[in-house]
Length: 439
View: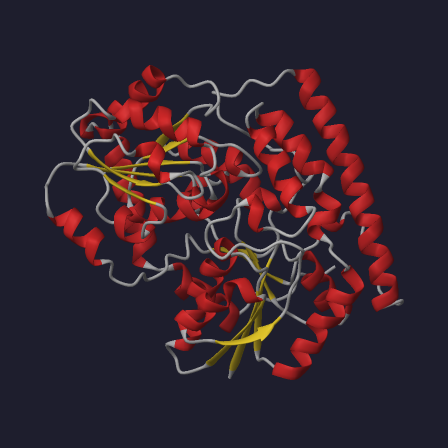
């Protein structure tokens, strides 16, 4: 038996997919990963085989910097970072404008490359990152069944009258004007129409007999897996989903880090883990305000500086831990609070660990993810551009207070998610998929 995993060349995408794949590996089945060279070391660390497949222009082996990207992608990344400094709507507008170039790179050629990988590996099961549109286009055109893994918030698959790129909900800390929202929706509707036309043009070449799509962003595989806790998803939206499974999370096993383990064991003072992931860690200005908010509190802080210069944080208390990269799963297991940008890996891993969250969302589905954390009563959310040091501290204090209820609710949800790990849910779902819908 062989499982084929198809992933873009980004660590944040590959890590959860690889973690799901360990359910097959543990049963003695072969796992082959089709991805690019930047994440080859991750594939090797899991003990999987790799087939080279470069699905897009960019890549990210763990921490992303504009200067490491190909010409054109570097400027796009700088533009994105600049947009995050303006706010929610401007960032979503910037991302919408670049969407066609980002998501369907050389679609016919990439689709055919994916079909060739499938023919070469002859897998029994396939799982694909939902955002690997070119890969899914190739599989759909060839009529190949696959597990479609939505790694981000479930709103990455628009339902009903939703439009891809337009957040269906967001925390109260953000209050865009109706006019700005109307303009954003109009832009996203135009981009969606253009994207669908590009999808259909490629589909007509790949399979002239295939019916065209009405909305390519709403296309999905026949086996839908949502890497997200159902408890953080609105029940009204869940009712609109096609047959699916909520995985909860794909929490990876990390190698032991002696420095981090020694630091954790050195004191019983509560630990606050701070990380803005591989992209948004460039926002050193926001990290600096978080640091200042935490300074006077009786906590120890583990700060992942990412692409920010760690020398900016040389004056933090001596019992804090600052490194460019830190083992997130290890630290979440011992943390009393996480301050995060709201990336899906961070939200789902923190939820599984049972840790309250202060979410400072910058882009894409981070706004919807932050709203889910707030609505579930396991955290709070603030606008990273406008939240002052005092406002950040005022949010952190109740999240660290057991009597406020955040910690108890987070612990209970974490225990529920850990009882059946996401990789087990994925294996069971693909081993016994639901019957296809009639009509």
